[in-house]
Length: 432
Image 1 (cartoon, rainbow, N blue to C red):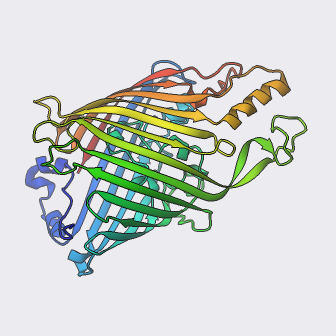
Image 2 (cartoon, one colour):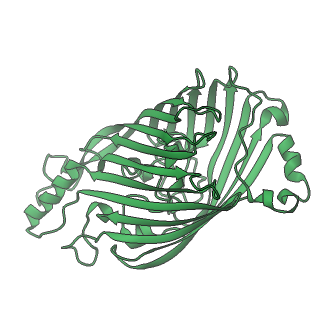
Image 3 (cartoon, rainbow, N blue to C red):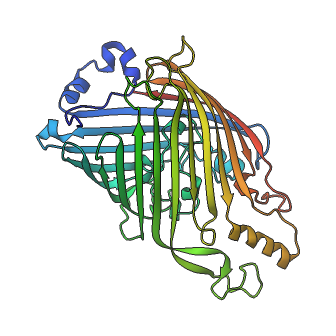
């Protein structure tokens, strides 16, 4: 059975290396004893592309996140009730993805329009010895759905491109949340079932919903479900740890045909009305595996060597991306004198849908002008995450972006595609 009184282990904090644990007045400890915790996380990075893309150069971006959580059973005697909220101050972070590569796949998972914005704001009620929970408020889907735990160290690992490129405004995921509800059932320690219903369009982050406080509720909803199976997750287990996830989604909005207009003509045809045929709703499925393949003696589920992969598909006729695949390998704690360091390699692949590629061929046929035909985009990342001290990591990284934007025309020379290119950078993350 789940111990309802157990608290999750505190994440590493640089405060533990400061005088008085960074709490000279004792207020943080006093609040913690009453179930209230808070923290700050600053992520700053410098990234620059040495080749390819639409321009060369380096950019700096940063994100300051503040969060507060409260165990309202401790604080107010309400059994099983918890509160959480976080907010971001994002600065100079509309960076290499938009300005240098025009890519579809995330280059940096902190990249967003510069602003100060609310993200999540929710209450969660737990029942039946914490086996069932109901969360409601302002939520993000990528906090719980479509996640690979072992991929989190990579700066390109993010809300999958098949969701971000296809859903209105990218869907309710970083950097924006929307009102929603989430149900979770844990019948035992190995299995979980999640179901979430969200407002399906958070609004454009740069114009419509810069502060995250629109609280939109009138857009067509997004429904997500996921089944999870965990094994050998205990610290003392000798078996290889892993998590398998199967999930799917359905968005109830209306979506444009990627090739044809409302009369059945190609959108490239001079006779076309220019109004794309509309479909009611779009759906998709996905599968995820996180698998440890080497576990050191007395090592935990995050130690040793692990591999991960996410795969997903959705209909070609109404989606720009119809197939997504990522995967990689992570080495954790492999150096005896650097037990908390990680290094690894990952690959992300997003395929342009058949219907969208057919439109490109139509454009060439009707115009007589040669141009690139979209195919896919792929990102390769090599990364090393070094712990400077508990709560502070430095992370040099290298990425190679193949077919930026899916192999789209260069904005200055439309007859050729934006060139593949290499990107180097370093990220610093400090948690307090």
